[in-house]
Amino acid sequence: MIRTHPADPPLTAGEAAKVAWLIARMAKRNVAGDDVHQADLQAKLDRILNTARKRAEKAAAAKK
Image (cartoon, rainbow, N blue to C red):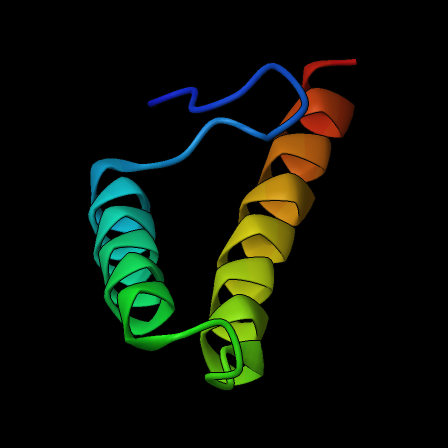
């Protein structure tokens, strides 16, 4: 598992690659201008992090 930030759940290698790709796309859009819409990419990123968070909670509950 890959940990990106202390507040974020651990990510699998595939999830980490998707997150990196989304962040790169968001940076590219940001270069185009501040008024460029990025909510679609942010929603995809949130969905990946929520899935990882649920998996981490489920694993922690299984350990108990």
